[in-house]
Image 1: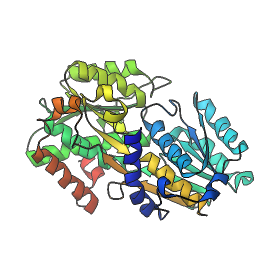
Image 2: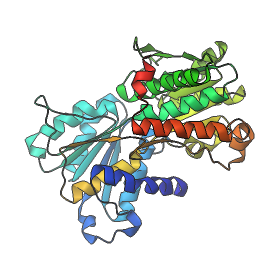
Image 3: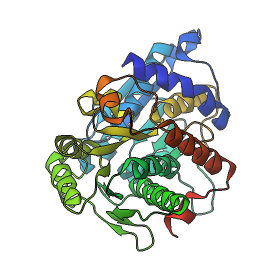
Length: 368
């Protein structure tokens, strides 16, 4: 937890600058007035210890608590929980209510435009929002991530270590926050193929047709068996690296790939840290720095910027990244120490620079 919190705070200044907010870290804050301001999260299913998407947001909330804010959160049981959970936080006199997850949008939007809630700041993690006239509600902040940029880097890296030159991806459900990962995965494979003059096959997603492999279950992001069987099916088609974009469903994939001596790419957090038991299969993770964005949004709200803006996390502003390739964990180095060469790392850094300067456009490569 301490390691993840340190990593979260190292990107906070970048995110704050991008949002135009405060760059003060929790450890530096001495504003006693924050104890009178209540920051709240409506977490999706999985809750604060899912070692994934929700946990990243919750770590931001914990940092806010350390900074002096009063905090609270709720956890959804299923889709029917969203509206009552958000209302529960409103009834608890929360000053900022941030909903985590694309599915919470309908409930959050209704609360934000309710005149009774005009004094409350609302945020939505994994989406942006504008009214029909194109304006963003004055009490709303969208928090989204150009995660395809990070996934493109991860796919290039995966193609570089793949023996079969077949890599795969799948999603929990076909939401934009999911398919962006998958777009980047295809883009990175195509970019590698172009640069190296080799064929790379990608299973599980076609960005042009917008068709791919998704979990049809009612709890698509919490289905370890689906993750396992999907990984096994991909390996049966020669895939040796799989990018699971499916919350804890991905744990089944990580186990299957590790058992087979093959490789995985994680999502949202540095999953070699949050899921150390799978570090030996996790090449890297495509990360959304959700916690830092939550910290910045709440501090902006507290400072008087109630909303009216949408924030997009990118490689350039530090909102997205891949997990470090300079690792010391023995499980990781035993698997990847010789596969991830200095040359491959340099190529990934060059691709990152090209994405940032605009000479490489992810979606263009995804749809080539």
